[in-house]
Amino acid sequence: MAGKMRLLIAEDDELVLLGLKLVVEQLGHQVYATARTAEEAVDIAECTLPDMALIDVGLADGSDGLFATREISGRLEIPVIVCSAHATEEQALGAGARRFLMKPFGIEALAEAIDGIRGPHVAGATLAA
Image (cartoon, rainbow, N blue to C red; front, top):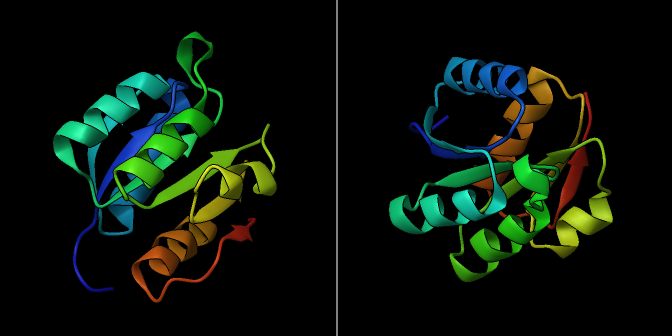
């Protein structure tokens, strides 16, 4: 792995967020910022330009992580990994995600997704635990 990535995580479940933060840091990366809503994720991404974003589909206040994915991936050109138990791979990739993780997923799947984005671009792929 070549260097620390700065990640934005958009997740509204505090326990899931805590787990993701611990795993991302265990993998040698930095959780640069977190967001609870899609709008907050887009605003933070615009201001901080993280290396990558990890976005849940169902966010606080009924906001849509796929909206955030379209904005962050499309307009800001920041690679996105979508993770969800409620969306499909087709929806995630259609919104511009580079990878899709079906919840629940394991540490290895997250590591592969992050490393897959860092390496040569491969059209979207689904990873499961």
